[in-house]
Length: 81
Image 1 (cartoon, rainbow, N blue to C red):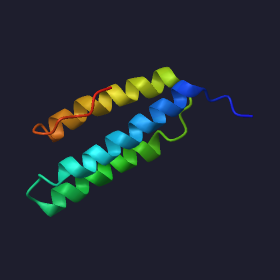
Image 2 (image 1 turned 45 degrees about the horizontal axis):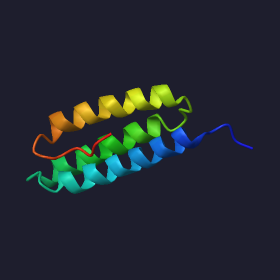
Image 3 (image 1 turned 90 degrees about the vertical axis):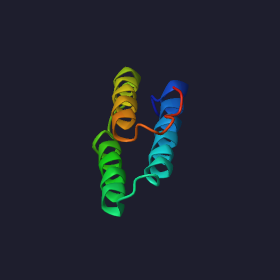
């Protein structure tokens, strides 16, 4: 039996939704290379933090990701938390 609670699975869904958002929002970037690098960067952040199980740490990482995405893709509406 795992120690992951409902909050963990909700956060997991939020991460996936944010990843989908990054893919869709990156379509507005005119340079294909920049688009590819943006998606690769976000994907690598997800992979790098895949091992995290502490919901507080995951929430903090999501908050940072939201800020960074707003900077990289300023014209996009980042999904609400």
